[in-house]
Length: 167
Image (cartoon, rainbow, N blue to C red; front, top):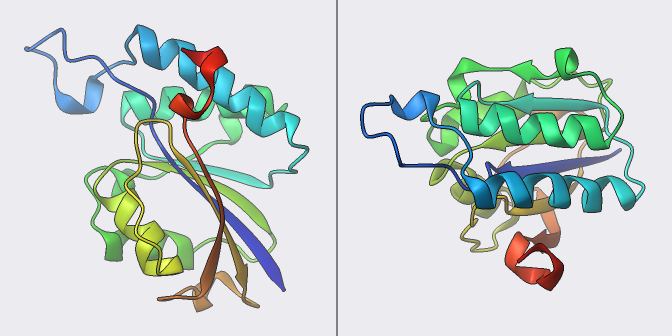
């Protein structure tokens, strides 16, 4: 069975408030410009999304909400998973392995360096995910629990600076 996993790094966040906890950082102006534009581009591709999983950190959750809206999904449907925040690659792989098999196409929103490393682990491709980077991985696996090293093909890799209209 073919499964599609989109690994997405949160949009650009603000460092303006030095007293704010990292977990609570919001998107900056660039992030607020890029996230809805990238989400619309993604939705316009016609991809049918079954599930959105996100880190509950404000910058990741906010980015995921733009994608949910663009795909016509309720924000309440976003599966927030604490383990994604500050996760290493093996923790993120566990998140993927625990996806319910009824979902064939999933968006997972997270943070670097984990999200970049997971792209590499699954596809064997070295990718440095910029903010709001989107890596599309295709996997020929029967069950999500079968996800492992080099089980995926990197079909596409996109990010805001690829699109002049987002600048």
